[in-house]
Picture 1 (cartoon, one colour):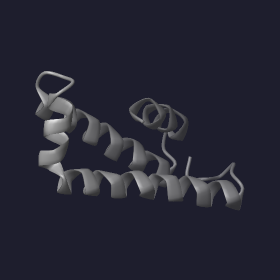
Picture 2 (cartoon, helix red, strand yellow; picture 1 turned 45 degrees about the vertical axis):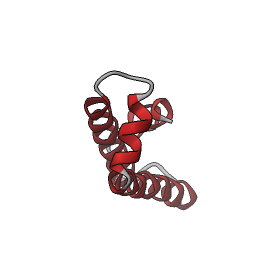
Picture 3 (cartoon, helix red, strand yellow; picture 1 turned 45 degrees about the horizontal axis):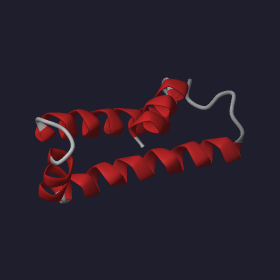
Length: 81
């Protein structure tokens, strides 16, 4: 936990990826209407699925930044992409 077994290169990469996903959460909230319309064409209850997606994305991005469950967080982010 907290980057004890990682090299400096791995730490920087993990933090950059986590920050990227946190920034994407902010961006997706800013274009909320567009995302609702886009998801609504594919899934029923688009608001529900968008909130779940943003919550998972935020939690996984934060987990990468603080190196808590980073392997699980990476898998969650891969599935969300």
